[in-house]
Image 1 (cartoon, rainbow, N blue to C red):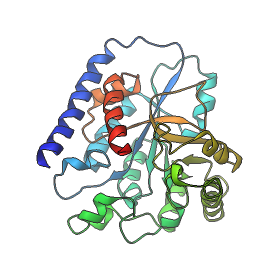
Image 2: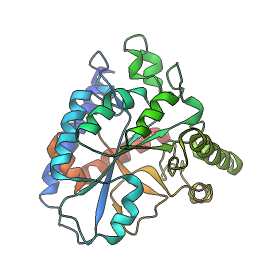
Image 3: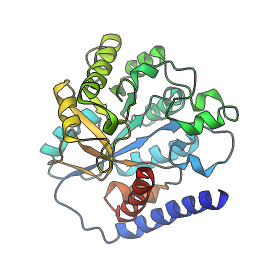
Length: 298
């Protein structure tokens, strides 16, 4: 197991270095593009575990990442992105959106103060049936296994008070991550409709009509069939203005606003790696993303 974990970390580090080199050969595009980063936990795990690389970024590292992004990129609220891409003739700085999945409480306690420091807007996607959850999220196997080894803040969900404070900050919009976090490819059309409509109705009734305008598909991969054209149409019909996937890539003016790609931010991402990602030096990550996709399909 340790060998496998070490290999996983080595692959990510190699991909990061390769991306930095690839940036040197990435031809600037006249077509405006934007990088939508997504995070999960912003927490100190309390012990070193390379398996956290995918989902966990320590607050100190997150601060360094946001500071670096603030220096070389322009933060754009997610809901404004389609309009910015349509009207932009090219930006002096890369356009970056910040998103956070699953509604962990450490978004409010750890990430928000850092976002506020750099005035970086963000969208937090929450699973409405799990708001205020006192147990590890049912789909978060790492937290379930390690709950006794890490502080509750590493896996606890935001409650309504946390969400209200996020909205009051003026920097955060709350998006829907469905009602139950079901796998799209295993759902009936009726279930997909219920997941999209119920989560939107709950968030708007509690937080106001300015919220739940964006949707993040659970599991999020079109290649794995978790997101389909029918699911995207369902989300649009439910009243959302846009939706994000976990497909790797940059968003463009001609990208379907209900199938926006994103790029995962890792604890191992240095400022140089982040910059490479924002300008589209993604070839090394397409390989690692493909390998991970194959693994998840098995």
